[in-house]
Amino acid sequence: MSDLFEDYSMAAELTGAYDEMFAPGQIPRHAYAQIAGALEELTLTDVTARADSMARTFLDRGVTFDYAGEERPFPIDIVPRIISGEDWDIVERGVKQRVRALEAFLDDVYGNMKVVADGVIPRRLITSSAHFHREVSGFDPVAGARVMISGIDLIRDANGTFRVLEDNVRVPSGVSYVLENRRAMAKGLPEAFGQQRVRPVEEYPRRLLSALRKSAPPSVEDPTVVVLTPGVYNSAYFEHTLLAGLMGVELVEGRDLICRGNRVYMRTTAGEQRVDVIYKRIDDEFLDPLQFRSDSMLGCPGIVNAARAGGVTVTNAVGNGVADDKLVYSYVPDLIRYYLDEEPVIDNVDTYRLEDEQSREYVLAHLDELVVKPVGGSGGKGLVIGPDASKEELEALRAKVLAEPREWIAQPVLQLSTVPTMSGDKFAPRHVDLRPFAINDGDDVYVLPGGLTRVALKEGSLIVNSSQGGGSKDTWVLADGVPGPVQQGQKHVAERASGRSTDSDWQNQQAETEQQ
Image (tube, one colour):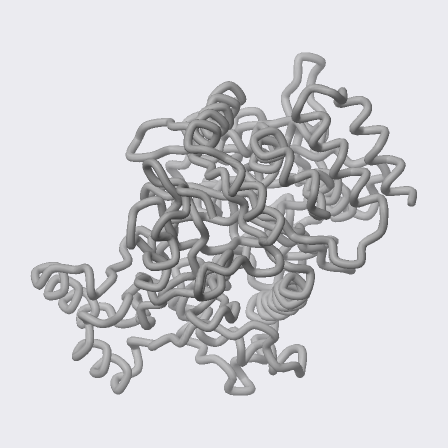
């Protein structure tokens, strides 16, 4: 390998993690053979120039995120994360299974609660969740699914085995970076991209719009869909604008909507227009001040009653957050067995429930060896990695756990798998996770081939969240056995990124591919 990989093998082995690109001895794994060859031909000057070009592209397109209150370009690394077709089959089946089980669970807990009556999960666990909303108990969505859009976070352990780290079925974000990463990588590393049969990601907006339209109230023939955003100060606002634009629907704020007669209307320059489907990108608690926070200025009064009456569809469904609860997460393997009569395709990470006295005693005795997480936390906020924490931090954590044990879980410290990442003047191993995105239209679950690979840019760090200083990688799923249209679509991605193909050319090609 080139000098850029000098000492890489030694550094990777020191992490104790599974390296995605290299087997021991710095031998490229089969899926990475071509990318390794392409990188070997590059010098530090080449890599730096391409990385700078990709960063400028993100800045020009407004691909940013909120880091410590400051808008920054979203970091993307030049080395993609590659998943073989065989490994992706496991991911796809596991995510679909998980989504179906969570869908059944949410339908049950807001209905008859058979899962409680049958002793699978304690009632107090559900009712004590901050995101269990009694306001929608007994309310069945008019059409579609409760979990239409989901992001299931996965990691690979030291053996290279996929594990589920957490579920995101409230307002999962990050798919915009998947789309933008692909555009940037096709331009930044075209010689490698052109040699690989990479499955495309560009059909996600079309799939999403189709599912949203399908979920409209049954009496509506040509539904009007909107994306509801908290506004420009939200950290995911770029994603809201991108998805609305790609789907060709209106991006609205709560002040743009009005409820009347259990119908929702959008204020336009031509007058009020009825809205049939709302893809909400705000938390439930801010959606409807008549039902939740009375001081909310982000939502619109009356939306929940309109949805209950069948006048509008709101997705993801209100109340989904109970399935995001990290304590509920620990029961999902049991929920899969209960609702689907199947064994989990992808197992959870081993988890201690701290409301259990025996587990709590063990965890408190081994705080310096474990990761402790708040059950309602997100974005890496509030978690404590025991081996990296000071005595003062561990003592403060102990007091919090003893005061509210239901609010915490604990897990072993897992060495997330690593992928070569540019660091200074060479590549170094950095830990990654994976968030595949799924769309559930009520009949089938589509899993976007690839998803968002997040990477911890700091040496030794296991925290991959962008809000904590992490970055991302383009995720390539190899199209093993997939015929021509994938290659044709891939060719147009590279041509469009390099300026040799117009957007209309791309759209025509996409239409031809879909027909085939």
